[in-house]
Image (cartoon, rainbow over all chains, first blue to last red; front, side, top):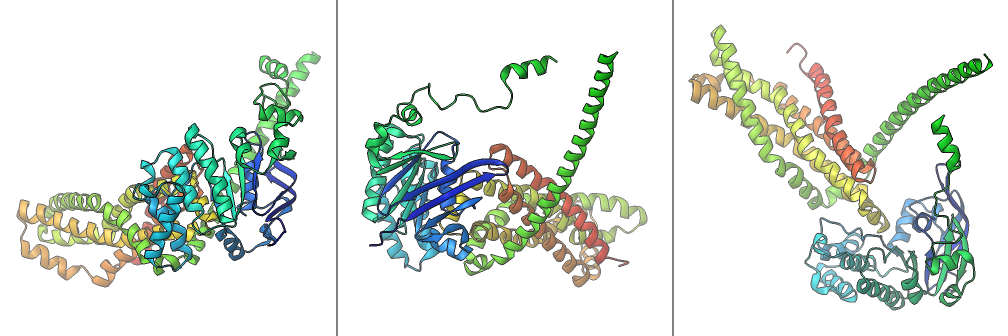
Length: 269
Length: 278
């Protein structure tokens, strides 16, 4: 088996116009592992996923997926890479004009010449894996948030990807759905022999299922380690994040150039 | 005294800054509009480059013809009927003053086939189907469906945009033809059935005067061009909109406004080119 990590990110920086989102990020996703990227909202987690998927181009540095530098791929190479990648979007991003069945069959119909009978069996198998075989006739508008997330999960594993990316898979789920999705992520990763990246800020659920965790703050990796190491970490940022404390190094206020007093004085003048 | 001077200086700086700010804003407006026009042109080219799927998998385009064309039928047919009826009334009122009420058929048919059919049908199409296309693509963008498609290695321009574009382009001439046909029928109802203009004159004069190449084909060319304009504006506004509720609503409004103005402007240009001295 190839021992080279599936995803390698080296000195990755990215800016939107003049706003720096990521600066000098280094991280590695080994094959077969589930790795979480955690951090507060707006710290650059989803941007990292989009850079891995080639939807954005880095300002500097590189992302290697399966040995290929993503931003150097032409559109054909990029699409070839994406065919071996699955992504679960924050709210599922199901195609609302298609049934659950057609959503899961979408990639198979687009990328393969499989006969419809075989696609039928494969779709039901994927839906069975996420516990929704009986829901294949429903439309996305008839699904609950948790069910939609699971259908999206079935859709993203349609072509047995080598890399799975999850963008906030636990956001807005009730405790039961949350636990089901967590277990599914782990089980599917092991069953497919894939590698998974979870971008999340749900600490407790993630610590149960992941092998390794990176913490991102203000566009930098500030801590990393296994679930056990993170739980026992004394790093102030990690401690504040894991235990959900209001006081700590993460500021409550959005950064501003002017002091509040100065702003009031300016208004008065 | 010194304080007053300082105050004046500060005011001058502020006004200077405001003038500069205004210039910067103006420049930004101009460059951003030019940039957007350039992007729209490249987008138009990209639609053509990725149109293979729309024709290889015709069911995708047929589906859009159904949603844009067939679903617009009622508004097109009813509007066509009423426009024709109004033409019948107004035309008769004017023509009978000169003793030419028999020419009512010519007036109704030429007005509809040359102008009102393509133009009014396109304006209705822009507000009924164009806005729906923009809203659908915009909402697909806002709910990350287009991103999801890209991540599944499926090009959204080929799979979502091009079939909608071609669906609109194919539907438009057919709808304009139906609009004109219904209009002629409306004119017949009012002119012949209601007012009593001679039926034979109504139809025979129309048949003798309306030229297939000059009038009908030019009308079809017009409606085809309007179909391209409305569909292009609709898919572009949807694809380029801000992925928020306000963004989608603004894009929908822009589709109706921009395509309506573009239709009227293009109609003038086409009319000037087609009907010089005819």
